[in-house]
Image (cartoon, rainbow, N blue to C red):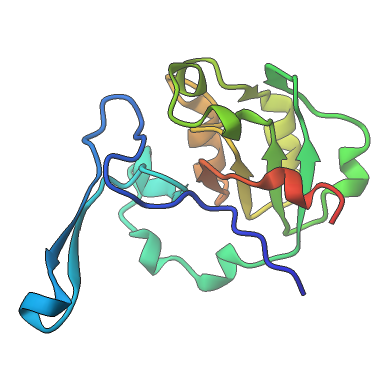
Length: 179
């Protein structure tokens, strides 16, 4: 079995969503001087690869740690949506996307991670596709972009109201295309 890491490395001064505080990762204790190594990490909830849950943009009071573990595990598929500024529903998705699955959108934008282009010009999902994913009872929609939409974040809210979580800032999705 081959494993592919889809997450961003957490490091000092890593890229963050515009307006968020910088990530700080500093070594505080050293083996030679203190007898052990230890680090301090100051990070916002939207730095690097992360899952958005309903508390992010709705009046939900449940922390992500309180959500059922089953919500985060399932069979998945990768949809190749490169060169699509608006990610729309296609007929073949009816066969590719299984009920109760996880859907990952490969846009190719992971190569722009940390740039102005990545945050300001990333592709967004079309609401028709979102309704299709809701009808398929998808658990998670993930992408190699910072968001499935832009302000006022209607797609975020739609997904959250339908118990669909959002996985953002993925990388290495190209390695899954023909796996």
